[in-house]
Length: 510
Ligand code: XMP
Image (cartoon, rainbow, N blue to C red):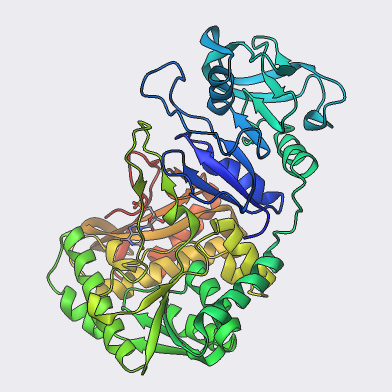
């Protein structure tokens, strides 16, 4: 990749944010763990050192070898990175008298510095450190201070090496992006050419040359990632992309037919496989959450395998894997053991399938996948869809699954989700759905006593599903949805709203 930036990760919680800010500047970058850096640095035009939970003064702190980088390529140290550069090259780092967390304001910004161009002297920055740089290296020039931190920013004379104690990548550092732009564009001279359109163009060309006339199989889920991946592959190889969209009987109401139609309308070579009966039969009597997940995963692989065999001479399996799934992250303790998250959209395929894997989105963050989708003309409604779990309603029906329960929950879910759309609330919510609880409760309808099911509605805001909070939906909205559900869905006489955050509660109830 041209104009690539290397971010060396020392385990900071903000490392991914640095990458996002850099890419927002239309510059491509990659995160690599400090203890497993790329062997060949020739494609990197600049390097950024991240923050870290470690103190540079501790024995087991990361001590990367920068001999091929410092003084040879534009280099920016952030927080730990700034302290490491100071300590390692002749300065001194010690414990600070006042620990600085959160907001601070720059009290001095040295005039005439390209790095600080456009940054005002009282600009707000975000600090998160307990060590401080007490003495700069001999050839360093101080370029910024805050009230409590004298050496908040410095550069090394005669090199394109810069360092800042604060975090330019977080939203609360008002001019953070400007500083990153000054470094990458004005100092490192990197062109801002990495746009969604450019990504589509180069990816399609790469896919064309990689895949030639080979056939690719891809499992579509109705979600954003698999759809965008399929669209890119379709642009590259057309009808040689064979998409399979499986109905596991646990999709939302009308989802299978609606989404299939949408895919066909997009010109994709897609086969809809209705395997509902097979899934529901295998699930009969199983009430353990993990047991249900396992059955759904296994039946999916079997169905997918059967269908794949019908595609003669398929050589590749396309997947919608995205960047956060493949980033090698430095463990929270900063130890040498890098953990690699793995991801299998199709739940792990049997080895005998012998397909090579092609993952056109594996360099992109979720919001970038959406932007790439938009640049290829995918509809906003498709790109804005809430995430939906692979096991579908199967993990929202607590206890055992029957076709009647699925039908009941589909109706409830449909009223809730449509209600969100009609009230203009859908896009304010990250994910929403309904749970069918395994209890009956007493009610009264007309003159009759009822003893029927209870459903729980859940709507959360989140960025990645790792943490989430419940959404404060208007009472009037909840009142209307509850009324509609109880009046229209036979067998439900009670609706509750889930007001638990994650952690400790998960988003799904199973
Ligand atoms: P939890 O319930 O763990 O969910 O807070 C976090 C996010 O992951 C989704 N989820 C799943 N997705 N297979 C999936 O493909 C699963 O088994 C699964 N379980 C949870 C969930 O919908 C939420 O977005």
